[in-house]
Image 1: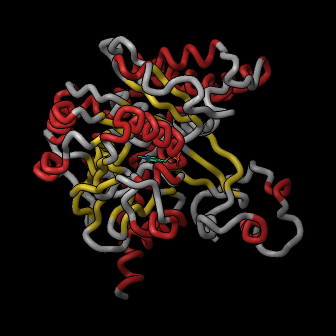
Image 2: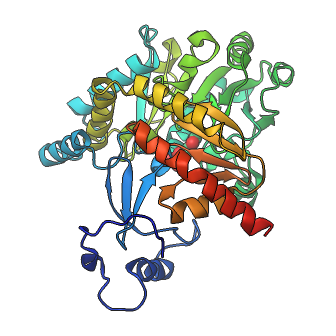
Image 3: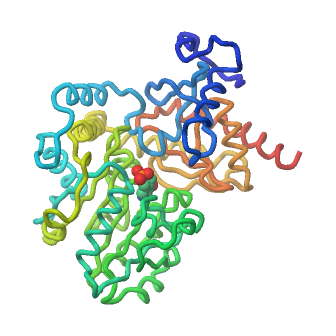
Length: 427
Ligand SMILES: *Cc1c(COP(=O)(O)O)cnc(C)c1O
């Protein structure tokens, strides 16, 4: 298969390469097709191991992981601090019900309040811990219903928004192909043109419970909110008595070079009512969080109104604490800003790249032709994992520990991949 550098020290026989019918990867893929529900299409590779920014497939090929499990593997793969935190916690106390708490849960909630509000969280601020991004948004949506009551049945979101796949979060997700097979969805959500303040002003009123925004739309192709939009949205939602919910599931936790992407927008002055987190928060352990700021946060959801069996479990909380500590100890926010800026500057000089969107290590390489799929396939063959987030754009969300040399190896490989993709379209 691929011709890029392979590692031989990895013993592929333990993954079943000995029977002689195709490669280990193709045999696992056949078994996948026979046992796993087809919601994702065929897997591109069967991965067996990771270290830092690299992963290895079942046939021993190495890849530079520039997608990081879709902005999840913040510390890269198998970071010793994360491994130790999870092993220690699981070996000490792995799960309790939410009739009980653990020091890890309490410490994480405290840390998250400080990360979201670096100047100190407003009085009353509270955290709810969940297991994923969609669950965090689901909880946030329930919270906004409690805020609005029957008098505020409307909820606003933006065109291009992605907030998750469970029914409530799906109602906030814009893409028709995701929504329509599952209608009727929870009612009341309206989608506004992206970045259009006049449309927002016209839509807001005393019947709106909340506005949901991604500071950077990830799934829509890494689209940051235009300058001034967030600050104006804050002012307008406050005037209308609606909550401002920021979905930082993809953009948060240092991904853009600040703890939260919104800290770097419009002078960092915007204080939202609710921030949702997941993806990078656990560095690979499933966890999500709702951080609600201000007096009402403490009271909107009362005992019995929301719950989760696994949410806030000590292993996931210990993982998140290890992620936060490591980002701080290794100075990764500054590293992300620096590495991202250098990568961006190098990418815009590549022939066939029209622009680069995003900041830090959440970037979209906008191509001058709709060849993203072919380019991603060629890059995979060459040993680089990227995501063709649009027909004409590649998304990069690598581990925050990506080195300048690793980033540079991708820049070097990109021209050939683009040429191959263009060649395949019009030979
Ligand atoms: C990925 C994502 C979600 C959904 O998170 P899951 O953990 O997949 O449920 C929600 N919002 C945004 C912005 C995301 O990128």
